[in-house]
Amino acid sequence: MKRQQPTFSEVNLSEHDGVRYLHLGTEWVQGSMRIDAPFEIDLEYVQRMMAWLLFVPEDSVAGRHAMQLGLGAGAITKFCYKKLRMTCTAVELNPRVADVCRAWMRLPPEDERLRVVIADAAREIRQAEWLGTVDALQVDLYDAQAAAPVLDSPDFYADCRHLLTDEGCMTVNLFGRTASFERSLESIASAFGARAVWQFKPTREGNTVVLAQRTPSRPKRDVLQLRAEAIEARWDLPATKWLKVFKALEK
Image (tube, rainbow, N blue to C red):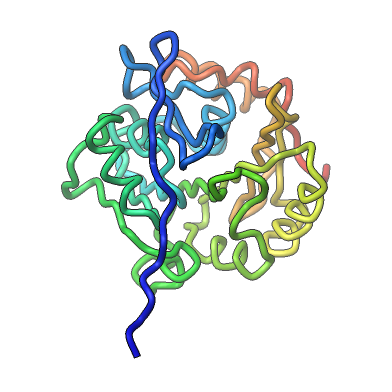
């Protein structure tokens, strides 16, 4: 019996006011790139996916391993690779997304620090080669309609936790104004422990980034402030603003 081939969403682009947007056959934006600054992060919620930087010394970032589940427009992958000088692995189900990112979103060619894996994220993250190797895991897995996360169970988040180093963090893009948000938060807390979970307030568009630590910690406020200032100065991310809208789930 011939194995049925998966069907993938159409990938298309739009441009407005100097920004190129990636879509999966609908009007929903799956990612963006500012054309005159292709390696910066354009969208606010995507910038917030970098909040794990608050939990590590800035001089230790280069050489660490970042993994993205869902390539999108490649913004996080490019930023981690080009700006942070990290080793990067992006896991993407739809090969057309990877092709478009290379052709139109300035995704660099693969080398010893950059790898794009075309695979089902739920299966790929169980591979032994990844376990305990990831310092920064970014999860952004929505379908073409952007209605709810495609992978969102306690078991999935437990597998994500197994990827992380002791200092590692996972950030997840969720929609904070939908009924599924509390369920997602409970699933993450079930896998990581509630004390390991931090969350942002929703952006204007409703995106709510949740962060979970492999090993829970409570950096003092002055430490977070100093790190935020360093992140802002070094990588031009609005990290000092993050601290006003970012808090631990449990004190």
